[in-house]
Image (cartoon, rainbow, N blue to C red; front, side, top):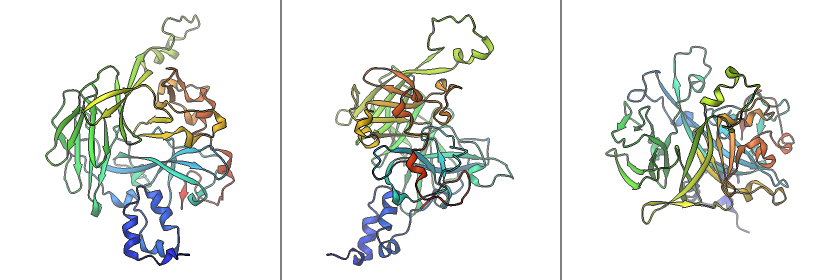
Length: 402
C-alpha cells in the first residue's frame, strides 16, 4: 500500500495550487502532518486586502474595508438534508454566521448552539463567495475594522492574482462601472452608460457586467474599455448574473408596486399603518436566460431541471436540489430564491428567514419561503444534528471554524 505521506513537497504544493476552493485546501491539509506542513493555510481576507481609498467612488467615509464571506452547504453523516450558511471570514479565528441571502447576522444564536464547528465532521460543499465593501467612518468605539461602518450596497467582483495582487469591479452610485487595482490611489470610473448597470461577475478569468436592459459587456481592466457580448433583452426591472453548471445565466426580476390584491378593499384599512404596502416594490415573477457563447446572445430557459438559483443582496449562486434535500422530502429544483422585503411579515416566526421569497419556474407561483416547509429550513432554524456536534465555551455570537 502506498505511503501518501512521502509525496514530494513540490508535488503537494503543485496540487494545492489547483484546488478550486479554500474548503478543498483545508481538507487537503488535514490528510496528514506532512501535507499540512507542505501547504500553508488559505489567507484570511483581513490579511490579504489593505484599507481601500474612497477617492473616485465615495466622499462619505475615510475609505473601505473589503470583507469576504463564503456560502456553504453542510450535511451531517446519515442525515440527507443540508443546511446552507454564510460565514464572514474577516477574523482568521472567529467567523460570523449570516443569512445566506441578506446582509444580516444570525444573532443572537440559540442558547445551546455550538460555539465551535469542526468542518471535518461534516460533508461540506462550497456554493459561492461574496465580497462586500464596508465604509470606514470615524467610530472610536468600533472593536474591529469590520464593525467600523455600513456596507456599500453594490455587489463586488474580485480577481486575485499571485503575490496578493487584486482587481475589484463594482457599480458606482451613478450606475457606471468602477474599477480598483491593488496599488492604485483611487477608483477609476468607466465612462460607458447607455443604461445603468445592475450586476457584475467574475467568471472564467474575466469580468462581466450587465445593465438594466440586459446588455452584457466584457470589461477590459487594462484599458477600461467594454465590449458588448450579448444585446439587450428588456422586459424586467432588475437583472442578475448567476454562474450555474458552467453556464452564465441572466435572471430578470419583474417588480410591481402595491399590495398583492390590488383590487381588494379592506374596510378596516389603517392608512398610516399600511401605506408602505402601496409604495414599496414587490417581486411578481422572473425570467431566466442563458448566454450562448457561440452566437453572443441570450436564450430563454424554461426549465432549470434540478438546479436552484439564489439571488442575494451581494451575491448569486446555485445548487442542485438533489444535493440539498433527501428524496423522500419531495422538494425539487427549477426554482429561484431571492430577497424581497415586501414579504417581511410580523407573524413570520422564522424571523431570520424574513424577506426571502421563492419562485417556481414551472408553475409561476411566488411567495415567502416560510410557506414552503422544506425550503424554509434550508437557512433557519439550524437542524437538530447541529446541536449534537462538539461544543465548547466561546463568544455568544461568534462561530469558530477549524
